[in-house]
Every structure is written in C-alpha cells, then in structure tokens.
Length: 585
Image (cartoon, rainbow, N blue to C red; front, side, top):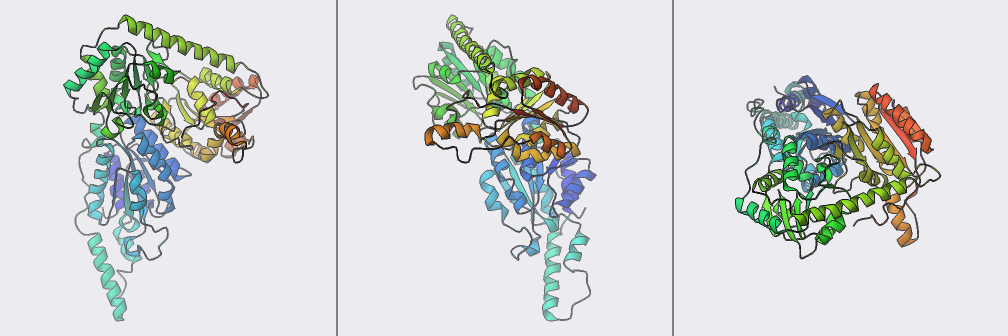
C-alpha cells in the first residue's frame, strides 16, 4: 500500500478500534476512507472537540485507547481543550492530526501550522511523520505510549501527501509531466522527484506488530505487584486506626476488566468509602460502606485516610481537608500526584486497584467496634443529608424545582443506564441525587471542569454500551456547546436522552458573583427553546414548565429513544441555593 490512509486503517483494524471519531477535512480524507475499508466505524461529528471527547469516553469505558482524527490547523487547535481534559483525566487517547503537504510547509499552504509545539504541553507523547515507511511504526508507538505508565493522550501529525496514494501525490507536483525546458524548471522537477523518492522510499511497514501486542492487551493485564513492605505498613496503619476513610478515584478504574476485583477488595477492607469520578458506581447503591455526602467533615475527623488514585488538589482543598495529625496512605500511578500538596505517610506508586487488592489480602484487620461506631455516625450524617435533599426538593416555585427534576430522572432511568453530566450548577446538583447503576456508568467533566463534554461522552458511551439508556444531564449553559451533535446522534442512529436544566443563567457563577461583586454581568441567559433546536436537528424535543408535566415528558423521551430517535427534555427550573459556596479556584 503506497498511501498512508489505508495503512492507518489497517493499524486501527488490527488494534481492534471500534470507532474513529472525526470531523472531515481534505488533509485527513484518506484516513477516513482507509478506516471504513477496514471495517472501522467512522463517526463524524460537528466539532473537533466532540471527536476527542468521544475518544476519551471510549478510553475510560474500555481501558483501550480511543482514537480521533482531525484536520490540520484549526482542526487541531479546536481539539486542544478536549486534549487537556483527557490529559488530566489520564485517558489514553490517540489523536491523528492532518498537516499541510511536506513540500508546501512554510509556503502559505492552507491551514499550515507547526502543530507539535502547540500540542506538546497537553499530551504525553507527540511525533510528526516525514516518510511513509515511518507511518505505521510511529502509529504503533503512539498506541503504546498512550497506555504506558500513567495513561494519557498522544498526538501524531500526518502530512496530507503521505496519506494519499503515491500516484496522486506525484501528479500534484507534476513529477510525471513532460520534461521542462528552462533550467529553473528542470531543477524544480529534480528537487520534487528527489523529495518524493525519499518520502515514499523503502517498504511500507503495514505489517507492524501483532494485534495482541502493546496497550490493547496489557490494559487488561495486572501490572507488577507493589512492594510488600509498603503494603504491610499500610495494613499496620489501618490496624491501629479508629476513624479510617477510603477515597477511590478515577485512576483506580483504568483497567475496567478488574472492576469486580476492585469492588471485592474495597468490600473486604471494610472502610467507609467515598467514590469519585469514574469510580462512582463501583459499589451497589445500598452498600453499607458507601457514603455520598459530607465528605469534607468525614476527612476532617479521620485519623487514617487512604487516597486510592486521588490527588490532594483543589477538590480536597489542596490537602487541607485532611488534618495534619492524620496518617495518609496514597496509592497512585504517579509519584508526583501522590505527593501533591501533602506528603503521605505511606506512598505506593503503581496500579491502584492492585494495591487495594494486595492490601485486602494482607490479613486485613477485622472490623473493630470503633470502626462500627464510626461508620454508623457517618451513615447517620449521610441519611440526614438525604432527608435535607428531599425537603428541599419539595419546595414549590414558579417552574420546576431543580432537585425534584433530578429526582424525576433518577426515578425514570433504567437500571442499566449510563449518566453523562455536563454543566455547572444543575449537573453538579444531579451528582448528589443520581445514583450510578454500576461500575463505569457515570461520566462527568472531571478535574478540568470542562463544559461541553456531554455529546462526545454520550457518543462514546452509546457506542460502547449500545443496549443501555444513555442520559445527558445538561446545564443550559453547557448545552449550547454540543447541542449541534443532535445532528450526529440522528445521522448515526444513536438515540441518547438529554435533559436540560434551564434556569436562564450560568447559575453556579452568578450566585457567587452577585453576592461578592454585586453584579450578574455575563451570567444571564434566556429560557431558550432547546427542545425546538433538538427537533430541528431531527430529534424529539419536549418542553416542561410545570412539575406535573415532567414524568410524562421523560416517559415520552424514553419511548422516542427506544424507537431509535434521540430526545431532549427542556426543563424550566427555578433558581436554588442548594450549592451555595460551590465555586472553586
């Protein structure tokens, strides 16, 4: 094969990539055609960020790299926010970027730019292909690097003249035209032929490595075990603890196949546990160890805290939520992240799930009476918060109470549903009320706080779990970022359900801004008819302004989705102070 597009398609097929997410462009057209020819599903979207968000969701849910391809210049720069989001989420994403033809670099070509310096801060590995024979080895390296060590996104730049067939490219440059007469024209012809000969020289490396090599296989294998001495030290600390707390974060879930083993280890340890990020849903909703509320208070009272893939960043007030007198056990793939803002008593660098399994197997201390009393107190605090939520949800207003709206979604969603949260105040409110139906059934923006993930995450989730209901819970501010992807859902037959909490504002920001600065400038929106927009893109749309109409509208949306039509429910909600003081810096 003398065109890189088919070679890339061959690698993707051999790697078992189920979907390539993209927004078309002349620089990458051969990649899309090559992928389709090899049976890889090509999912074209309306914004490059959505393509990378979808690849990110695929990576989180499957454990194998998600793949996106974007065109040169603005195609790459449009993907930067999603790349950074994947970097902070430690998601293995392979981004293939088009580039101007090699001969035309720096000569004013369409969408020509030097991508690597722009992309490099947001990826863990990047390279540019300059010869056809290097394309497959570099792409294979990209897959390997995405999952090696701390997973993350990688970038491979592919110039257009390496992706099209050699005969077409030589025709572009007139390399097969009749001999020119002038000396300058002869030199130009010689230079172009020499450049093309070098670019296409050598055997195409289409064979590459076998499909079972690299990240696609190692993602499902258990990494090397942890230092037994560190495991014993951690077990000794827990054996002396009176008020232990376990925090499990997304990093513990990078091997989805190990989720059941991880859940057993957490249950065996017997520690009160808070789950965050991709770890939500790891334990059943009614599990006696599972806590959902008042985490800050629990940490402030704890004497031993186990951070399983959780750094001491702003979410833990840079470590200040944990008292200095408490002992900290930090398990993390990254030593720097394990030591961020707080030096642990015990540091275990490596696979988080493996560490918890080893800790659970190291003669874990029996549940002590002090632990029982500690858990009982935390559970009572949780129950009190649930009562408070129910009380607040019952307060009537002009439109629909936002807590009641989330309760209605919780009641309507199937037991196998996947929730995608995208927004500020409304989406975060939903996180207090919606309960993940199982492991890997909850996706949210994550540590970067990125708005706009909704449609891309839903695309990845629906393709990964086609039989499940996939719900997007949108704030009305966030909805506008990816509402155009309803066109994508319709074209590709992906019937997701979206619920927009429409309070006509950027409420999370407005609430604090008005109080601190006395002005709501820049935070006011309209009660836009997002349901009409969804219908305009070919979906089903429903508008709800009264509490009595909400359950029927959700039922209609579910029916539309079962019939193959994506649906959006635009719920007009009242403002609330439920999350007052929630702005983080």
